[in-house]
Amino acid sequence: MINVYDILETIRMIQDECLDIRTITMGISLLDCIDSDIDVACKKVYDKITTKAAHLVEVGEQIEREYGIPIINKRISVTPIAIVSAACKCSPVKFAKTMDEAAKAVGVNLIGGYSALVPKGFSAGDIELIKSIPEALACTERVCSSVNIGSTKTGINLDACKMMGQIVRECAEKTVDNACFGAAKLVVFCNAVEDNPFMAGAFHGVGEPDCMINVGVSGPGVVRAALKKYPDADITKISDVIKEISYKITRVGQLVGTTASERLGVPFGIVDLSLAPTPAVGDSVAHILEEIGLERCGTHGTTACLALLNDAVKKGGVMACSRIGGLSGAFIPVSEDAGMIDAAKSGALCIEKLEAMTAVCSVGLDMICIPGDTPADTISAIIADEAAIGMVNNKTTAVRVIPAIGKQVGEELDWGGLFGCGPVMPLKKESPSKFINRGGQIPAPLHSLKN
Image (cartoon, rainbow, N blue to C red; front, top):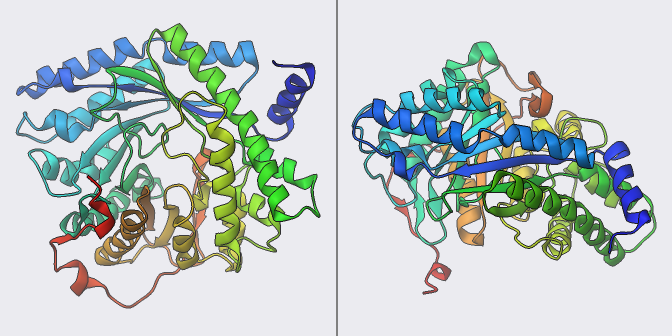
């Protein structure tokens, strides 16, 4: 039963500690829009998106006003376009433009699903879509893209890794006048999930309902504020405090999700209880780790603190909601986290340490700026390394790196807003080209044989 204390505590979390709902994302299936005529297919796509999501923004704003809960983004995810476009036998860029037009028509911030799923190989439409990603992201404003190149069950498609290194570079080069922003709208996954509400990796999986609502919560500032009250507690108590506050954060997500579902007349999917940081002061995952006891995020002990945080967030959140899904954990996007930015600038946080941290947290190497002259094969090798962590540990991992064309280590890319700014981080100089160019399939680990 909700009491006065709980209400006042929630108000304080919203006003003083940066609690918000990061996104409500409507997933829309486009399987019934498939047609061999691309113009007919695109019209079906536009009509379905604008019909299903016609009131999404309106309902989100109503909930904000009624409950006083900030909902930062209203978004849409759709069926991977490589599936929808396969029958058309031509460039799928027109689908990206249609998605962008539909997103603008209904007023959402971003639309995801310009995606391909190629963990074991390429089917009809996949290669065409992947090759078109740089153009699609350069000529649209709100479209986001993702490619899944591996899984625990299938292994890693090294040919896809090689392609994606080239594609990431091309995305940056095509949008160099916009701070290489195209690469910030592209994620390369291993073990991608079908109900992820967070961009840029969201797509609506083929196993999902025709239409549904997923919610992504936030709240790093709330967790840090709770920990400040226990400066001398042992680590068991710290874990308990995180679990308790995560429960409360997730209850807010459950309320928003069920309310939006009822008003829009579509099923409620999941709450993704990931702690999603922002560049705002007081809303940083890195600062939580420092509150636990690190002098600076990135120093020795960072991976252990992050493992504790991630585990406690999941344990607390899972009891607070009817359906937990998506990625659910702690995000560590460098450019979107004020504490991560400071740690990277100071040299305490390097890409090797970030890679180690991804073994115990949600997703992977996220929003990291790398030198503009980084070869495509090096980017491919970064993707392969991160995919290997996901494959072996049976978890979702991802790479979203931005080659800062024309910039070197120590300089910055600045996008403002939730995307923040990123210091260009150093990489190893030695070449992985021979490995990447071998091609083929990295075999799945033995523990994939669970049937």
